[in-house]
Length: 499
Image 1: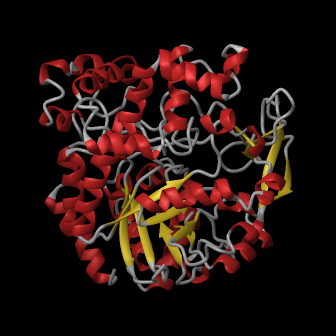
Image 2: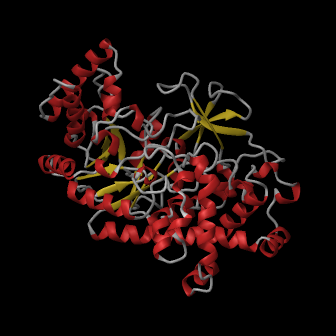
Image 3: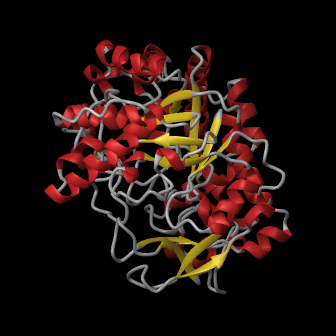
């Protein structure tokens, strides 16, 4: 990546203030691009755009390739005359404009999309060419089977459907062709809307940063169709699953449950699956952040069936071997977590920018903390926090007196190093000081979550790691949040710190 100083905003698509219950690729997304431009931002970082399933996490997707149909804008479908406004019943889709209700979307939004598809001209040359290209054939086939089996895990399907075969494919394409074409159309329509939005952003000199999860879900088309890519037993059950050891987020660690890769097989095939996956992501994003990058150096595996991540252990990953032909790609490495010399070596070998997080820097007084500004380097991206962090304002608000004293001293030291004033008279002042710190770091990039810019508290937290309770991935902003006054305030920081 060119190390030109920039500022960007982290905002998931689902958090946009689109009508009908969830953020989409419609007008609200274009309005946000205008807000980015008015703020002086040069990057919009999104979370993964993959279709979601149980738990609603884009990091537990049933497909490494399939996009989330919920992000298809319904009003744009009305403009195509394939959907009628009266067919969008908002009372069935949501009850609170600040939060996504995925259960309601699952029950009713797909039905709305199917109505639009029923009027879509499947003979259109663009769609015919899209189908013939075959890129989303596996995804559509898998989703057709899931729908046929009431969306249960593939492991609970009839035994003859748990393995891909030519006979199974022929039967499905004959008996369930309507479902198969519907799922193909969701990908076609998503990409049509997304590409138009990306073109608009690029014309305004805004680059789109995507996010690629390291793992896929066990209940995924990838595991179902390509079991040899994963560490599975003869019955295709996981031998080991992914997670991380106990840390500040959880005393039990994080038991993600994703199947571990069969890295020896991946190496034998020249990492073809991973190469295709990275290429697919870079075909739609200007910049790609790879999540849990340390897992390519060494990954934490936990015996299948464990209730916590306590009894796991580390194993060597593919290391630089996977990336030796990708050093010139615009990739950012999420290098958070347990960082050892192996991770540091891998970052140095690839040359990818890593991350520094001010939320971590201001909670301790350790001079050797890699997140401190004096330990940061130009080839990094500074974040106030990630999608896994409590928003800065909420974090400061909930500190104990002892934690607050440590924080104020840490902020003072960081501010002195960055040559900025450390205002802390009010919680808002202190929050702005932390935001300005992120702008002032030596890192060539600064990215701040939208909730931090708005001084939101816990209500705006995107994700609480290791928690599956329906309260993650749901917070939404209102159109009033993207005000011209906030844009001017942010732009003044962009100018001050030459980003």
